[in-house]
Length: 268
Image (cartoon, rainbow, N blue to C red; front, side, top):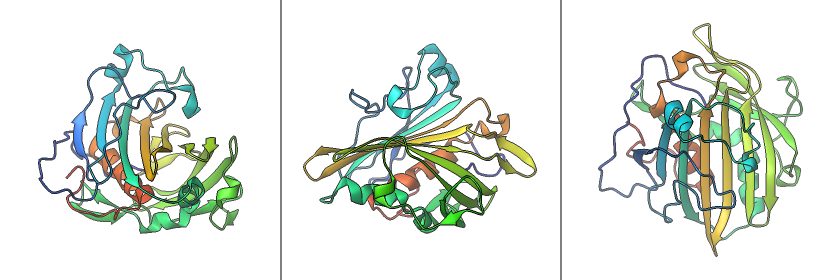
């Protein structure tokens, strides 16, 4: 999940469109406090209702420091790690299948080629990645078919690669922290540096995300996504919230089975 080209705006506008465009979020900047994933407590932001736009909130390092925010244990993130920017997306969708089917959706890395996001730089829909696939090891030469649900078990580390149109090929590590018939928690981080224009934007592990999917009532599943930048992120990567939001919302739509290029875009 990469940022746009240098120079995109830092301003996020609240969407006022009356259209219920298949879970397009109304963007809000969070107050002091920090995100609260559903790890034994009610999520903040809360899940929006099925068919309603998911909630999106953004926190910066000064807000997180003032709130003394630390990542909850369920994410597997170092509790002493520093967060520069955090994006949270929370929504829900109707689904009558099993958690295994949703886990398989996450493990189908090659389908990321079908995901589109709104580029704030180009002002058009773009592929999230040019290509992507599963790996047997962190080595790009160890390519293999997509992960099956049976492989995605707790404490199992899986690797995959993406070819981003702006930053080239990147290897990620995906760790399953929880899995039950009603819930799955997965953390993702870059293993290789992320570069653009010959500049390192993210050192290894400096761009992290978490995906939590849980059944919140019969036939209704909640999706809670976090994306954060850490100490290894370049200052050049620090003012691109609109890009982070659009890419995170694209993943939300993909997991929820919503067209990823539904109008209007999350952060135009």
